[in-house]
Amino acid sequence: MEYLNYVLIGLAIFFLLPRLLPVRGVKQITVTELKSKLSERNKQFIDVRTPGEYKTNHIKGFKNIPLHVLSGNTNMLSKEKEVILICQSGMRSNKASKLLTQKGFHRVSNVKGGMNAWR
Image (tube, rainbow, N blue to C red):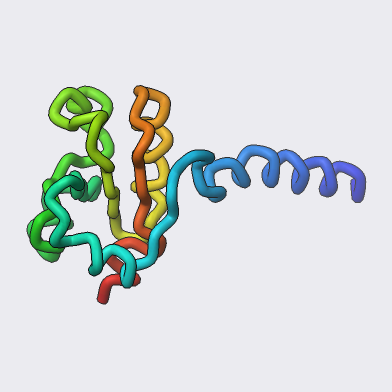
């Protein structure tokens, strides 16, 4: 029985760890770093939260493209400009980072801690 517990824990780590780790090739930035980038015109600021979350509180300059529709809307983004992603905690924007890199975006940054860190 004890062996089974170790196997289950190992499997859980194997499947969950990749989802929690930063995406390779994606820059992880702090909210302090974000603040210094907000005035730069050569960046694309994308909030991947739901429209309701975005409406309640968002950072000026960020465009709302929810994670669940991002895959079908990547044509709205330029691969030539850096994409800076944010969500509530950094988890959904991390997933969005992975999606964009798989679609050929090479300059992608994720805001660590998301809107929770922004407050």
